[in-house]
Length: 168
Image (cartoon, rainbow, N blue to C red):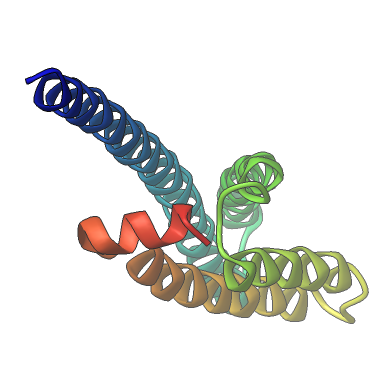
């Protein structure tokens, strides 16, 4: 009789421990998933904003200011607004990248580092149009890589996938 009570008690204790362990793993996994999702979302939003501003900026640079002083003034204002918009997005991407290093895949981090390198190299372009084109291409490429990485990293992996990550 005492043996069956001890076995039942031990089984209850063991079940509680396993349940607590599973709960901790699943909660921690969900929190990490939510943080990764937040970082990817923030980066993709700012990359999209940068791409939009750079596309409009590139079109404006190619079109030129037009004729007359008023047209040139309007063009200068448009260029300044678009440059400021792209610059703000770039700042947000740089800030998010520093946090991303702890949560995102190596592929995503590599894409962000490549983007920053291309941005830095764009300063050596021979023309304003080339500068904008280099930056636009780099942003588009980073967006595509991050989107694919986000789809992969945020895919539903089920209970066994979560458990396998914590038992390795």
